[in-house]
Length: 337
Image (cartoon, rainbow, N blue to C red; front, side, top):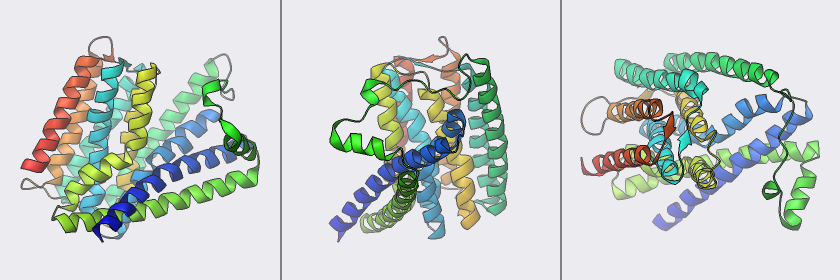
C-alpha cells in the first residue's frame, strides 16, 4: 500500500507540472486569439500558471482541513524558491536584480511575508477576512505591475503587441512536435488543451495531497514537515529546473524577478484563496511552529533584498553559497529539533 501511495504521489507531481504547462499554453493561445497583449498574458495567465500547482495543493489541503500541509506548502515553496533555487542558480551564473524588482517587487514580497507572519501570529489562524486582505493587496499590486509594464512597453520601439522571434531551439522537434504546433493554431484545440490542463492540475493536486497525508501518517511524520519538504520542493520543480537551466545558459535577466513574483503569488493568491475555504491554523509555540517557518520565509526575503543591494545588484557565487548554507541549516533544524 505504501508503494502505491508513493507512486500516486509521483504521478500527482507529474500531472501538476504538465497540467500547468498545458493550461498556460492553452490559455495564452486563447488570449492571443482574442487579441490580448502578450505582455498582459505574461503578467497574468502565465504568472498564474506557474503558481497553479501551489494553489491547487493548498486549496485541496484547506478543503480537507489539512491546514499544516496548506501553510507548509506556501511557506516551504517560498523558502525553496529563494534559498535553494536562487542559491543554486547563482552558483552557475551571476544573477542581476532588475531595478523594478528593487523598487516594487522585493518591497511587496517583504510586505507579503510580514503580513503572513503578523496576521498568522495575531489570530493564530489565517481566516477568511485575512484572505480578503491578501487578495485585495494582491489586486493592487497586479494593477501597478500591469500599468507599469504597459507604460514601459509603449515607450519601447515595437510597442506592447510585438513578440520576440522564436529561437530555433524553441521550435518543436519531430512529427509530434510539428503536429502539436499546427494544432495550436486551432481555437477548439486550445480550449481543449486549457481544460485538460486544468483538470490535470486539479487531479494531480488531489493525488499529491492524499499521498502526502498517507505517507506522513505511515512514517509518523507531521503534515507540516511533509508540506515544507516533499510537497514544497515538488511544487517548485518547474521554477527549479527553469531557473537553473537559464543560469547555466546565461539567460538570467528575469530569473530573480520570476522567483520574487512566484513568492508574492504564493502568499497573496495561494494563501489568500485557501483561507477562504477553511481557516488555516497557525501554531505559534514550540519547535513545530508555523510561525517559525513563516519567520524563516521572511528572513529569506530579507536576505535576498540585502544581497541584492550590494555588489552591483547582482547575486554571485558568494551570495549563492550563503543562501544554500541557510537552506541546509533550516532543513537540519526541521529534522533534528
